Structures are given as C-alpha cells and as structure tokens.
Length: 64
Image 1 (cartoon, one colour):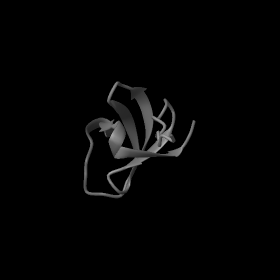
Image 2 (cartoon, helix red, strand yellow; image 1 turned 90 degrees about the vertical axis):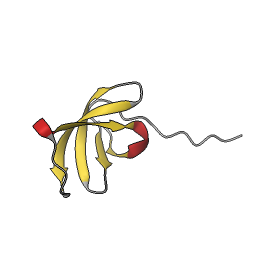
Image 3 (cartoon, helix red, strand yellow; image 1 turned 180 degrees about the horizontal axis):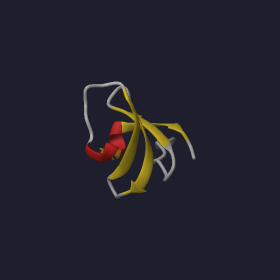
Image 4 (spheres, helix red, strand yellow; image 1 turned 135 degrees about the horizontal axis):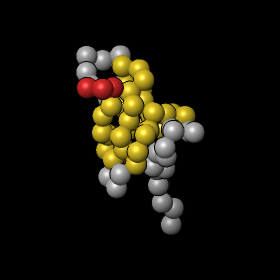
C-alpha cells in the first residue's frame, strides 16, 4: 500500500498560497504555519506582513 503524504513545511521554507502569495515559514503549529509574506501579487493585505496558513492551503516551493 502506497500512501501519498505531503511534507509539512519547516521553519525557513518558502511557500506559495492563495495563487500568488509567497512567504517564509516562521513558526509551525499543529494545523497551520505562521508566514512572513515576502511577495504578494494579489489584492489581499496582511497586517505586519504576517499571516496564518493551514497546512492544506499551501505548497512548499523551496526548502530551507
């Protein structure tokens, strides 16, 4: 039996979420990560350039 397990981001990993927002993982929680937004090509705005993203809602694009 083969399981398709996606890797949870680690601190320092670069992730992509919401179709155009990139960020760096700063903290890992049980069901989410806290991200420092580095690039935002959407109309979304984030106070302090930080946000929380659920594990199921991002893709790791570069590992630390």
